[in-house]
Image (tube, rainbow, N blue to C red; front, top):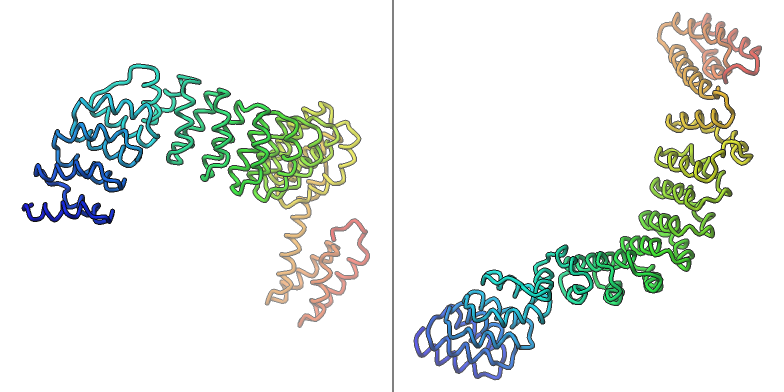
Length: 460
C-alpha cells in the first residue's frame, strides 16, 4: 500500500463519522506495513466500539508482536465484542505474555468472553489449577458434569451462563443447577422460568422440581399458563415432585388442557401428590379421547387409592387399548384385592356383556375374561358372537345365490333359506317373489311361510 493511500486512510480515521472510520480500519486489514500497524493501534482507542473491535481483529492478522500489550489492555475494555476480538488476536499471536490477562478474562468475563478465553488458553498450553479456575474453565468449555462435581461453588458461574448465553448452554446450565440442588440456585432458576426460550423454561421447571421445595411452588404455579405445551408439562411434573398440596387445584385445571401431553403430566403429578380431592376429576379422564391420558388416569387412580372409583376402573378393563386395560387392572388390585366381589363391580355385568359384541377382538377377549372373574363362569356371549358372524356370512352367500343367472342356483338358495327358517332371510326372499322363474317364486313363498312359523329364538 503506497504512502498516499495511508495518508488518505489516516485522514479518514480522523473523520467524525464512525462509519467512515470503520471503513478505514477495514482497508488496513492484512497489511503488514509498520505504519498500518501504527494506525491500527491508534484506532484501538477509538470512541466507537465497533471501530475498536475491527482494529483488534486487524491487529491479530498483522502478526506484529508490538500489538500484544495493547491487545492485553483491550481485555479490560467494557465492550464485550472488543474483548472477544482481542482474545482471538492474542490467540493468533500466540504470546505467553497474554496468559495472565486471559485467565482474568476467564474468571471475570461474560460467558461469551469466558468461552473464547478458555479456547485461547488451551491453544497456549495453559491448564487450570485452583478450584476457581477449574470451575470457570469447565463451565466455559461446556464440561457440565465436571463442573457439577464442585457443588455449590459452581452455582455462580452456572447462573451467569443461565442469565446470558446461547439457549443450548442455558438449558445445560439449568440442568446442572438442578443436579447440584443447592439453595443458592433457586433465584436464578426462578428467573429462568421467564426466559425467552421455551426449552430453557422447561429445564428450569424440571430443575426446580428436583429440589425447589415449597418456596418454588408459587413461582411454578404462576407459569402454568405458559404458551408452550412442553413448559406446561414440565411445570406440572415439577409440582408433582415438590409434593405441596396447594398445587392440587391448579393441576386439576390442567386436566382440561388442550394438549394431551399436559393432561398426562398433570395426572402423573396428581398421583404423586396423592390428594383425594383429585379423585373424581382424574376418574373423568378415563373417558379422554387419547390413550396415553386414559392410561395415566388409570395409573393415578391406583395411587390415589379411593374405592369410590372401582366402577370406572372396572369399565376401563374393557377399554379399546391394552395399556389402559392393564393399568386399570393394576390399580384395582391396589385399591381392593377382592374388587371382583364388590357390589359396584357386579352391577356392571350387563355393560361388560355388551363389550363382548365390540368390533375389537381385544375388547371381546378382555370382556370374556372379566366376566369369568366376576361370575366364575365362562360367558357364552363370545360363542354367540362367533355364531352371529357365521350366520351373517351364510346369509350373505345365500343372498348372492338368489341373484345368480342360473335359475337352479336361485331355487336352491330359496329352499335353503326355507330350511334355515331365519327371519334375517325374509327381505331377500320377498324380492325373489318377483323372480322370472315360477319354481323360484314358489320356493320363496314356501320359505317365507316357514320363517313365519319359526320360533322367536331363531337368528334374526
